[in-house]
Image (cartoon, rainbow, N blue to C red):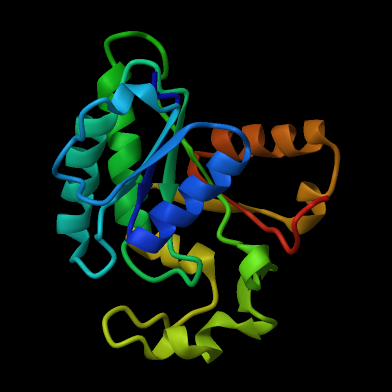
Length: 212
């Protein structure tokens, strides 16, 4: 039975995330075409789906996520993951909104959650992407000074993940600092609860390296 559902905005993201989960010992399937649900999918613990949505307009990307999560979500799913680009290209806010909207609608009559929140980590330290003081760095260079700023389809003109999410999402977005992330688990939880009470539903976590 599926326990983890990953929705990625491109094939590389779907495969990379699925491979990382597989290394943890979970049986994983990578789905290339989000419009077709393969047979025997329930045999895998993790399903990673390529949406190919990065270059779409925001409304189309939103709809694609809504349709895909409806097609691939099973009752046993314990973790939903919306894989975003590590250089913040694409429809980050709209796609996260779609997943949260789906979950809110799905469970609204079951008294499970009144609202959902996205825990977002823009960093990918293994690939040289780090996030500190609300600046995303690519191998030490601020994102807006890299090739991502000249992307022909989805240029990124800012290094601030907070700015991008606040512009793209209909939900309030806040950042949990690296200092808090490096603290005790109870400190992190306390900060998440505080931001939740303030209305944040997209919560960004700073990160600079993989903890060994």
